[in-house]
Image (cartoon, rainbow, N blue to C red):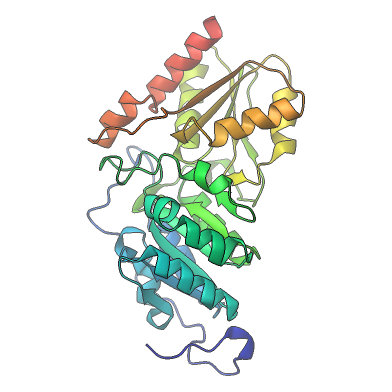
Amino acid sequence: MSELIPPHSRRKSKYAPRKAPDTRLATSAMIASLDAEGRETIAAPFGHALAELAQTRDDIVGLSADLSKYTDLHVFAHAHPDRFYQMGMAEQVMVSAAAGLAREGFTPFATTYAVFAARRAYDFICMAIAEENLPVKICCALPGLTTGYGPSHQATEDLAIMRGMPNLTVLDPCDAIDTMQATHAIADHPGPVYMRLLRGQVPNVLGEYDYQFKLGKAQMIHDGADVLFIASGFMTMRVLDAAKALARDGISCAVLHSPTIKPLDAETITREARKGGRLVVTAENHSVTGGLGEAVAATLMRAGVHVPFRQIGLPDEFLDAGALPTLHQQYGLTVDAVCASVKDWLSQ
């Protein structure tokens, strides 16, 4: 691999922006869409957004711990091979190398599975990146219950782990639109970021709502009078569908999407929760311990907002392996399960 020249010291670099490939690379055939039935999908939104971004920014580099094809970083690698680093199965080395690149003026995007970043590389992220407040973007596939491979690959506690790290911004985008827009936004953020990724054929859900990602902001997608859903990740997709189903039964639901888990948008969340008479329900693809739900609950308590409050999320346990639709039903993440829980809570 040729030596990279730091962006701030370049004149006419051979790593200057290049024209993107004319054809849009597909994702791996092994990666199925999470929830594509009846929806438009976009292939590898993270990979394509990063490749597009790198056309005009020669500080962008990509690193992967032997998983570029399974985090959609292979799209970036194809478009910008001289700015891609395959680090092998060595997550600690990858994040340490990313820290070094950041010190030299680059903006590294490092990808792996969420379990490997949160569990295996945590100390290296903390000491080499977060403590120094370096602009490394750690983008991780298989968050929460997006794989049936079992506890070795199900990152059900990654948000709890990463929320506790100072200086680290933590994101959980909903869909392809959210992911693409967030990729551009975090590239401009001066500090470190941990972002969950949906990979492969990712649904386009927020496109119909004139949505625009804003770092650190929660946004009302759909308003309602009876229930206030506060959701992140693909659970925003699920509660939007649940809100439509519940409306047919005369239950009016608001959906507040919070893709930024840290720093949480306390102002918007408390303002919406204060609007009287609504049951507040958090929904997340994460353990009920330490994620969005507990962050929202603590925010409301500190603000003196006392409302009926419930959580939809994964149990505080190691989950089973199996087919995703079966597991989502088993652990209450389906639209039907959300609707049933809300009806039960409202009847109490």
